[in-house]
Image 1 (tube, rainbow, N blue to C red):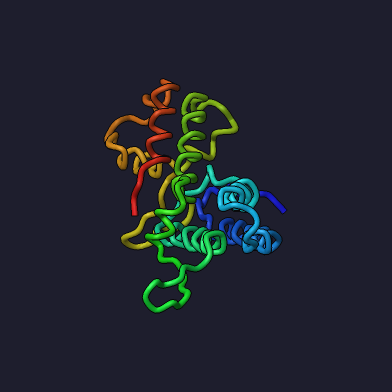
Image 2: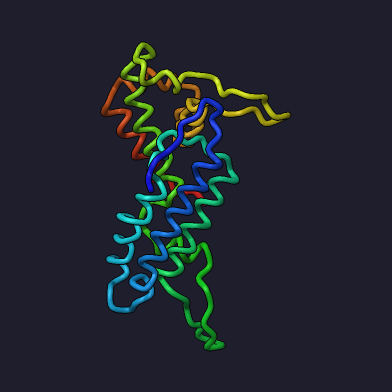
Length: 199
Protein backbone atom coordinates (compact mmCIF):
# COMPACT_ATOMS: atom_id res chain seq x y z
CA UNK A 1 0.00 0.00 0.00
CA UNK A 2 2.73 2.48 0.94
CA UNK A 3 5.61 3.33 -1.33
CA UNK A 4 6.84 6.39 -3.16
CA UNK A 5 8.53 6.95 -6.50
CA UNK A 6 11.43 9.42 -6.62
CA UNK A 7 12.04 10.47 -10.22
CA UNK A 8 14.70 12.61 -11.85
CA UNK A 9 11.94 14.41 -13.75
CA UNK A 10 10.83 15.81 -10.37
CA UNK A 11 7.23 15.09 -11.37
CA UNK A 12 5.04 14.08 -8.46
CA UNK A 13 1.48 14.32 -9.79
CA UNK A 14 1.10 10.53 -9.99
CA UNK A 15 2.70 10.05 -6.59
CA UNK A 16 0.33 12.54 -4.95
CA UNK A 17 -2.62 10.94 -6.73
CA UNK A 18 -1.63 7.54 -5.28
CA UNK A 19 -1.17 9.01 -1.83
CA UNK A 20 -4.57 10.75 -1.92
CA UNK A 21 -6.21 7.54 -3.13
CA UNK A 22 -4.68 5.66 -0.19
CA UNK A 23 -5.66 8.50 2.14
CA UNK A 24 -9.26 8.35 0.89
CA UNK A 25 -9.37 4.61 1.53
CA UNK A 26 -8.05 5.20 5.05
CA UNK A 27 -10.54 8.04 5.57
CA UNK A 28 -13.50 5.88 4.54
CA UNK A 29 -12.38 3.12 6.91
CA UNK A 30 -12.67 5.49 9.92
CA UNK A 31 -15.46 7.69 8.57
CA UNK A 32 -18.04 6.35 11.05
CA UNK A 33 -15.75 7.14 13.98
CA UNK A 34 -15.16 10.68 12.73
CA UNK A 35 -18.91 11.20 12.35
CA UNK A 36 -19.82 9.73 15.73
CA UNK A 37 -20.58 12.15 18.57
CA UNK A 38 -18.99 9.99 21.29
CA UNK A 39 -15.25 10.58 20.66
CA UNK A 40 -14.10 14.11 21.44
CA UNK A 41 -12.85 16.41 18.68
CA UNK A 42 -9.31 16.03 20.03
CA UNK A 43 -9.49 12.24 19.71
CA UNK A 44 -10.79 12.55 16.16
CA UNK A 45 -7.97 14.93 15.23
CA UNK A 46 -5.44 12.48 16.68
CA UNK A 47 -6.96 9.71 14.57
CA UNK A 48 -6.70 11.92 11.49
CA UNK A 49 -3.09 12.90 12.14
CA UNK A 50 -1.85 9.46 13.17
CA UNK A 51 -3.57 7.38 10.49
CA UNK A 52 -4.93 9.33 7.50
CA UNK A 53 -2.28 12.07 7.41
CA UNK A 54 0.54 9.56 7.88
CA UNK A 55 -0.65 7.59 4.87
CA UNK A 56 -1.06 10.66 2.64
CA UNK A 57 2.32 12.17 3.54
CA UNK A 58 4.43 9.03 3.24
CA UNK A 59 7.56 10.07 1.32
CA UNK A 60 6.53 13.74 1.13
CA UNK A 61 10.10 14.83 1.91
CA UNK A 62 10.92 14.47 -1.80
CA UNK A 63 7.94 16.45 -3.11
CA UNK A 64 8.29 19.73 -5.04
CA UNK A 65 4.77 21.07 -4.82
CA UNK A 66 3.10 23.39 -7.29
CA UNK A 67 0.26 25.67 -6.18
CA UNK A 68 -2.22 23.34 -7.87
CA UNK A 69 -0.90 20.34 -5.91
CA UNK A 70 -0.97 22.32 -2.67
CA UNK A 71 -4.61 23.13 -3.38
CA UNK A 72 -5.47 19.45 -3.94
CA UNK A 73 -3.93 18.53 -0.60
CA UNK A 74 -5.71 21.36 1.21
CA UNK A 75 -9.06 20.33 -0.30
CA UNK A 76 -8.52 16.79 0.95
CA UNK A 77 -7.69 18.00 4.45
CA UNK A 78 -10.69 20.37 4.57
CA UNK A 79 -13.00 17.52 3.61
CA UNK A 80 -11.74 15.40 6.51
CA UNK A 81 -11.92 18.33 8.94
CA UNK A 82 -15.52 19.08 7.93
CA UNK A 83 -16.35 15.49 8.84
CA UNK A 84 -14.60 15.89 12.21
CA UNK A 85 -16.13 19.23 13.22
CA UNK A 86 -19.49 18.62 11.56
CA UNK A 87 -21.96 21.23 10.31
CA UNK A 88 -22.99 24.36 12.18
CA UNK A 89 -26.51 25.57 12.78
CA UNK A 90 -27.28 29.13 11.79
CA UNK A 91 -28.67 30.95 14.83
CA UNK A 92 -30.98 33.14 12.74
CA UNK A 93 -32.41 30.73 10.14
CA UNK A 94 -31.90 27.47 12.06
CA UNK A 95 -30.49 25.85 8.92
CA UNK A 96 -27.47 23.53 9.15
CA UNK A 97 -24.55 24.53 6.93
CA UNK A 98 -21.00 23.42 6.20
CA UNK A 99 -18.19 25.28 7.95
CA UNK A 100 -16.30 27.81 5.84
CA UNK A 101 -12.54 27.46 5.35
CA UNK A 102 -11.82 30.38 7.69
CA UNK A 103 -13.91 28.75 10.43
CA UNK A 104 -12.06 25.45 9.96
CA UNK A 105 -8.73 27.26 10.22
CA UNK A 106 -9.82 28.73 13.55
CA UNK A 107 -11.06 25.40 14.90
CA UNK A 108 -8.12 23.30 13.71
CA UNK A 109 -5.19 24.52 15.77
CA UNK A 110 -2.66 21.98 14.43
CA UNK A 111 -0.33 22.61 11.51
CA UNK A 112 -2.06 22.34 8.12
CA UNK A 113 -1.05 19.67 5.63
CA UNK A 114 1.07 21.93 3.37
CA UNK A 115 3.03 23.30 6.34
CA UNK A 116 3.71 19.75 7.55
CA UNK A 117 5.09 18.86 4.12
CA UNK A 118 7.33 21.93 4.02
CA UNK A 119 8.72 21.28 7.48
CA UNK A 120 9.42 17.60 6.75
CA UNK A 121 11.04 18.55 3.44
CA UNK A 122 13.27 21.09 5.17
CA UNK A 123 14.21 18.68 7.95
CA UNK A 124 15.26 16.08 5.41
CA UNK A 125 17.09 18.68 3.27
CA UNK A 126 19.14 19.62 6.33
CA UNK A 127 20.25 16.02 6.71
CA UNK A 128 21.15 15.83 3.01
CA UNK A 129 23.14 19.09 3.23
CA UNK A 130 25.13 17.80 6.19
CA UNK A 131 25.88 14.52 4.36
CA UNK A 132 27.40 16.35 1.39
CA UNK A 133 27.28 15.77 -2.35
CA UNK A 134 29.72 12.86 -2.18
CA UNK A 135 27.17 10.48 -0.66
CA UNK A 136 25.70 8.17 -3.32
CA UNK A 137 22.25 8.09 -1.74
CA UNK A 138 21.86 11.88 -2.08
CA UNK A 139 22.75 12.01 -5.78
CA UNK A 140 19.18 12.54 -7.03
CA UNK A 141 18.73 15.55 -4.71
CA UNK A 142 21.31 17.68 -6.49
CA UNK A 143 20.34 16.78 -10.07
CA UNK A 144 18.52 19.02 -12.50
CA UNK A 145 14.95 17.96 -13.43
CA UNK A 146 14.91 15.98 -16.67
CA UNK A 147 12.68 16.64 -19.66
CA UNK A 148 11.71 19.78 -21.55
CA UNK A 149 11.13 22.93 -19.54
CA UNK A 150 7.61 24.31 -20.09
CA UNK A 151 7.28 27.87 -21.37
CA UNK A 152 7.31 30.50 -18.60
CA UNK A 153 7.23 27.77 -15.93
CA UNK A 154 10.57 25.96 -15.54
CA UNK A 155 10.58 22.82 -13.44
CA UNK A 156 11.69 23.41 -9.89
CA UNK A 157 14.69 21.72 -8.40
CA UNK A 158 14.28 20.34 -4.90
CA UNK A 159 16.57 22.99 -3.47
CA UNK A 160 14.46 25.72 -5.11
CA UNK A 161 11.64 24.73 -2.78
CA UNK A 162 13.92 25.02 0.23
CA UNK A 163 14.98 28.52 -0.83
CA UNK A 164 11.33 29.57 -1.20
CA UNK A 165 10.48 28.10 2.21
CA UNK A 166 13.34 30.07 3.79
CA UNK A 167 12.18 33.23 2.04
CA UNK A 168 8.82 32.86 3.79
CA UNK A 169 10.52 33.14 7.19
CA UNK A 170 12.81 36.03 6.25
CA UNK A 171 15.95 34.08 5.31
CA UNK A 172 15.75 34.51 1.55
CA UNK A 173 19.07 34.94 -0.23
CA UNK A 174 21.02 33.10 2.48
CA UNK A 175 23.00 29.96 1.65
CA UNK A 176 20.73 27.19 2.93
CA UNK A 177 23.54 24.61 2.88
CA UNK A 178 25.59 26.74 5.28
CA UNK A 179 22.53 27.33 7.46
CA UNK A 180 21.85 23.60 7.64
CA UNK A 181 25.28 22.87 9.12
CA UNK A 182 24.11 24.41 12.41
CA UNK A 183 21.57 21.82 13.59
CA UNK A 184 19.99 24.01 16.26
CA UNK A 185 19.53 26.98 13.96
CA UNK A 186 18.15 24.76 11.20
CA UNK A 187 15.71 23.16 13.64
CA UNK A 188 14.50 26.64 14.57
CA UNK A 189 13.93 27.47 10.90
CA UNK A 190 12.08 24.19 10.35
CA UNK A 191 9.75 25.02 13.24
CA UNK A 192 9.27 28.57 11.92
CA UNK A 193 8.26 27.25 8.48
CA UNK A 194 5.90 24.72 10.07
CA UNK A 195 4.18 27.20 12.39
CA UNK A 196 3.87 30.07 9.90
CA UNK A 197 0.24 31.12 9.72
CA UNK A 198 -0.67 31.92 6.14
CA UNK A 199 -4.05 31.84 4.36
